[in-house]
Image 1 (cartoon, helix red, strand yellow):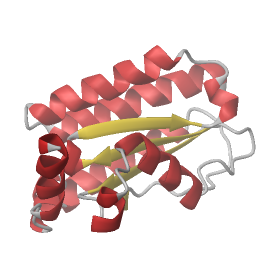
Image 2 (cartoon, rainbow, N blue to C red):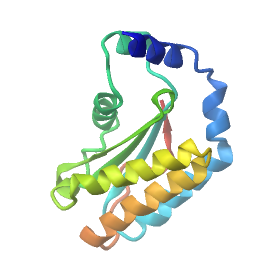
Image 3 (cartoon, rainbow, N blue to C red):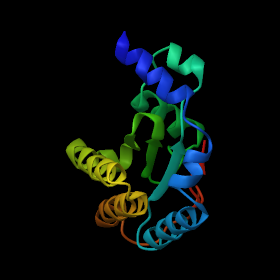
Image 4 (cartoon, rainbow, N blue to C red):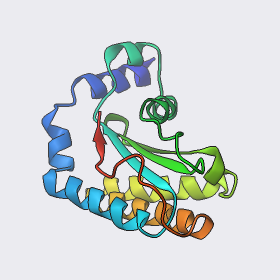
Length: 165
């Protein structure tokens, strides 16, 4: 019960400016450029979505970062790629949690432990206050996996700009 209350307070008291401090316009532009550069080397799609905090109703229901990432994956249509190889990198700042949701095409080729390792590295960088290194490192790692399984150039169906929720 105590941890649930602490979590709710973290979400409810996270000021909106915190997201702008963590990811200022220059960082958002660097993420967009990294996604575009990565996607020029493979037929996969990378989407980065960042959410500062969950709304009170989601907190009340006990929605976790993984469940929210799955919702965002569906809402943003990351599943709707030609080769079923879209990958969502979802960041929930209030929980200091990163989740990767990979569509079935690429998920069939990559061990879930690889996705977890990318998330853990990103979370460590974020914990050290190095958000740019964490985000760009995750994009590079996901891009390398996509490039090894889907080389070439595909159609950009998701856009490259990070999505701020």
